[in-house]
Image (cartoon, rainbow, N blue to C red):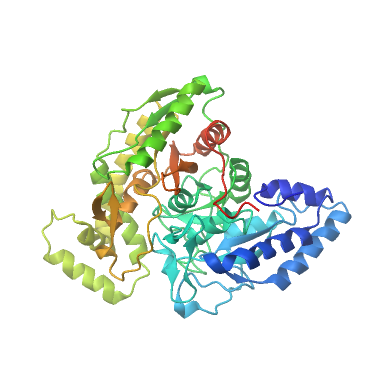
Length: 486
């Protein structure tokens, strides 16, 4: 029985049925890491002794007929932004290089309560604040499709580990495409849930002991199949322990019963963020597939929003979150630059400074703009079930670790574009707190993965996942990178 790229939840069923032992499963993934991780640097910390002890206990429990849950005995890795009790958690931050948390992050604990065995951590950028993975503690993580290319960020180590078959399931987070962009770059599946469905408590940042949930940011699963995304989401949903739920957590069923009832909007390219033609082609091909299955497809439908204005709004709200953990000197510098600037200047470097310097009064004004955007999306989704659009406007690009992020460039169809434009398609749906499922669609002409995001209405997670399943079944399922399929 091959374990490579098998469903994590399928593996759990086999462990509970005693068709395979949890110890053998753990050994399999440890062997994969021994074979492949040196060239990737995706898994950066492990506790094999504790994992082996828990795997033996899982096997003994199965012998007694005990069921630990839907992930009984399944070993998996966790993005190193999440606190893991007894296992070093760095978050790419040198000052935390040897820090071992006292308790698990809420979402990590949900995986463990479902029977999982956390045996390792996957690499992230400094404070999970980049769309590439590199830091001064663990170094650079490479893309298994092309090791001279980034695996994306900030859940890049998670996506690379999945694509290389080093783990069967992962846990990511997303405030700027950090689940969806790595999935697109590595050819795996991921789900960014509706904001607030899954607790981010215990994530770095904001910090191990912070009880409040950060604005915009979400926790969600990454996997190599949609079935695992759906089942993992069911495991993860709910508030942090000891925190009262602020809204119901019962997700409605998918918004369509048959494909001929499915209403699809497609937004494959736009001047607010020009897309590499091959990515737009793949998004259109996915729409063609759904249309061929009987779905109605509209390629001109758009929510009643200005995407450029949405980006301005989103960037300021996002940087107000990230800026809360920056030194006071950075905030004072941002305030000074904003005070000296033209009030109408929304150029990218200054836009980020505006977010860092945002006062509470100005945050309330930006939040009102976002609320109007959310209303426009809600109206849009009365006419459509899902929107297909890019995760990012480029495929995985060569490593570029220039300290000044504003000096980095990405090339789209031969044209140099600012690096920070990579946030634009992610923020298009994220700013409205919408769910979005990332799916692989194929590859570029030189063999790099291409994916798209499937966005749905607020609390429409099961709808986006149902469309992801259609595309997985009829268009493109997970395909391993060359050299990793055995």
